[in-house]
Length: 320
Image (cartoon, rainbow, N blue to C red; front, side, top):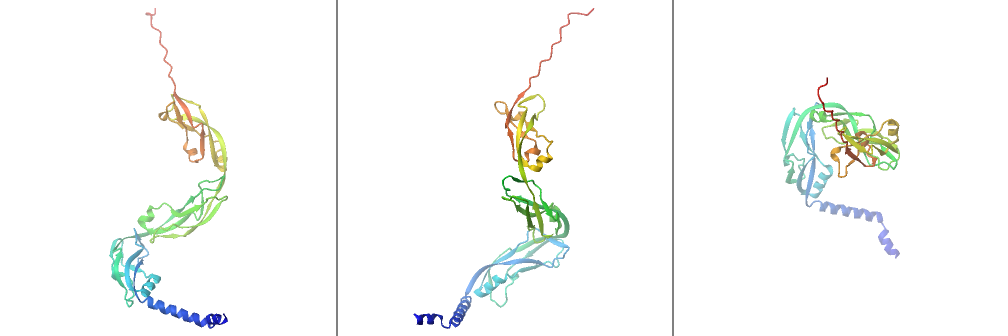
């Protein structure tokens, strides 16, 4: 047993070095064999003047199927050489460039050949003047806060606006800059987050690229308030009952701001169902809150009868 342990562990460092050298020799021989690899070459636009920008879709990469020794292909996959498209002489307008296997940055002495050029075989670009604008920050809010809390629809961003630079046609169409979504799912307090800008494209620059966002959450309060019911067609109709109750769950601050406001329910005689009942709908300002319930949900609508005009007495003859 002792002799077996000595056979395994004696000169252990030397044995590990020998094993490592054997693995390296094996890998060197193995990677000298012919191999095939589909490779993507990132496309870089170089030399464009600072006063110009490229609009439209710019391909991210050029793809090709390559053949060569395994070690050279692995080296290229690790280094990721890029295809450079020079725009040094570019002016405003359309540019159409043809691409082929000769544009790929293949090492000259590696013996790598292109078996199939996938492309794209041509790149079409539009060069425009570069413009700069100051635009407001836009942030979405995703998820539902914890029970008894609600997002009021407001957020605070620092800074409130950012500078956007890019091709004229694209920048002038923009009304805000998107900084993604802040998640409030299950949160019990004001949510604070640092949001990165949603990528606009390689021709655009946004400064700053991050904003600090605060999303306030307010506790909710449920109340029942009376609401008169009105007929959209105006007079000539009678509603029973004339008043309904609205059960509304809203932020506590809403009740403080709307203490003197009264919700109004509307019905349309044109929507009368069999039996004369019509569903009550709230005015838009209250309906947007989303958590309102009308009690009862429908009312009776009847057309008021018009009283007959009194007859004038007949004349019995000339008055003397």
